Length: 441
Image (cartoon, rainbow, N blue to C red; front, side):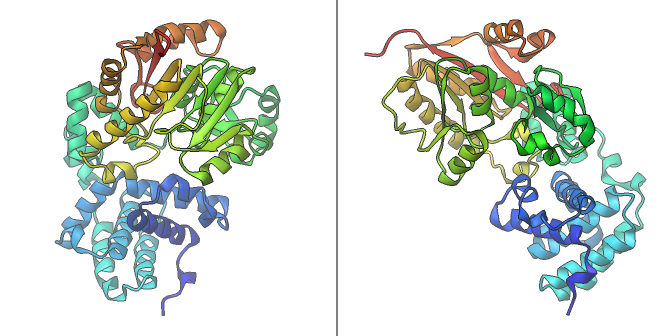
């Protein structure tokens, strides 16, 4: 019998995470912050994360080199075998510090441990063949000019982005998605800025939001400020969306994990801020993390009998603006989602419009179907609302000292906020402000 003791903890956990992602539609970010990694040392935790995210980012390219070496389509292999091949191939092609012997042998042991002993000779042969190939002959060098192959993205997505944003921007988006994303924190606590140097944390000011900081070194999750919830990990684009909200009563209607609600409460200290989410377990977590009022409900059927000054509607979407953090999305996403999700977004918008004076609509998507087109349809169906130019609110935030003055112009596209990864130093987001022009009834 193969022994788990012959497999390093990092590789074992990475394989388990990849298996759950493949078979249970789980998400890498959630699993990599779960108890699956609790027993790992910091070094093993880092390697497990590198292996999982690397395999997901470069999946298409890994499959291509495996197929060339095996003479067989990757789809013909059982999932356990396929993942062992990808894991081994990633280490051989992209991690120079990993001895080839370890990458090959432990991939073989992994597949044995997971009940596919008969595939062990094949995995050994394919990975040994790959180990003899030089980086100079890798597909990356051969695929210059083909963004899909060069950056391991589905061709249909690359073609869309090229048509929408142009070839140069599409290339920048794809390149950005293949890099480890910047860790950004929101920290308005002056005590944290004093404490950080004593806890081994090096920060530099972020590019857009004044209370945002990029983490250059150290683990912020181990700091006292993180434990006491005086700082939160949150991308700058997400922070920007939350800063757009203002009023005495604010609803965050699809709020989990609660970062935008927390910013809205901090930015509007006298306001009643209510967080809402469809899933009760997420609502319970938000209550714990933010201390704000949180309720479980469907945003298509609001359980309130009051008008909110502002509703933050950061709605479910394809997530194509976050592929650097969630690379598995690009392999799961199908084109029909661009019909189904905008319908859901429109249903939610129409629902909250009955109880909102102002709506901050946003998605972490690069797709116009989930941004500009949803807003256009909403305004046609809801003539009592109008689009407020986003630059007006951004300039107000700049004057208040919340965002950097030189950032405003570059964030605006046709009266909307639009950030594009690789062009802007953050995830890709779309946002619009909608305001009621007449009283209902």
